[in-house]
Length: 288
Image 1 (cartoon, rainbow, N blue to C red):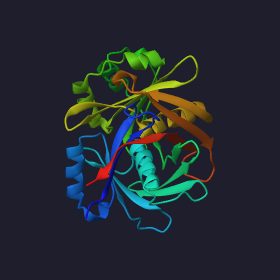
Image 2: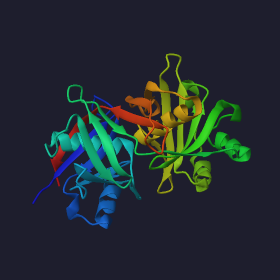
Image 3: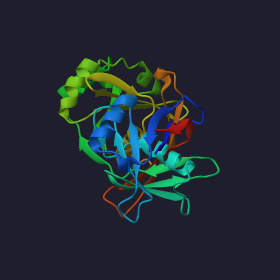
């Protein structure tokens, strides 16, 4: 019996300009080993598998794989998979909300059916201060830049562990020339890669996410968890609240746009609630 498959472009309204995710339905028919083999075959940054929820609060369960490992949570696969299950008619928003079950717990998604925008609430974030100056110097060197171009740096766990760097400007982000060999060695310090961002004069941000996968250097076209990490730095370091726009993918000839909202809260382990969103569009609709 054939099962549904969709390949969805995320953080864009135009096909082939965002970050693709492969979404396989009926994931309960597969073993973990089979899921990993399929994710390796698709060769995308992430591949997801939709399964029935095992808790009553969730609408569906999602498992997320890179080509080499399973992730508890990731941003663009969450939005792309939500788009896919809505388009397939498997779930309907309740009061504009959908709840995803994944390795990081329950993830709340806000769905604007008129615009197609889908936002997820970052399940959590944890910050670890980075004050090792020799390490920071090495990080700057691995990016082909001077130490004084790094305004702030913190290790953020929000599913993945991102070494999150605020650079002096958006242009500085675009000018980065990564040395992936050095990044590979430095990632032994407890992070999967770098989340870089810097501000344009108009107040929006440019971002890049650089990491190692299967011993190869990779740049993520548009990264939701990275945007969440970036926003958490702005919130915790500067007390930022409100809306911001993150652009990503320029170095890869993509045109990703991420909308982020930061709100202060008082009933959670984190001081701020962070919502990361964007549009998605199906590029491939088929069966497997």
